[in-house]
Length: 104
Image: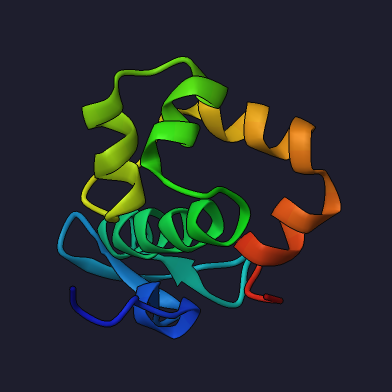
């Protein structure tokens, strides 16, 4: 498995292109790259699962998904949908939030 991306891997400069013209972002100091964030997120979520569950089989039972789906999350091959991430946040609270924010 390749190294997990970091927050810096999905941040881009404060200016971006809109219709071929450079536009400054006014409300945020950084603009997030959606594809980069998706890569970051699936690896970070895999790390969260590995830190909080014994194996992909346990993940499949807890989140009510097929074993193959849970195994893909476990390996960081795919990311879960919003309902699953919300459920993880509800079940794990601050532990989930700290981990996903890069604290642990």
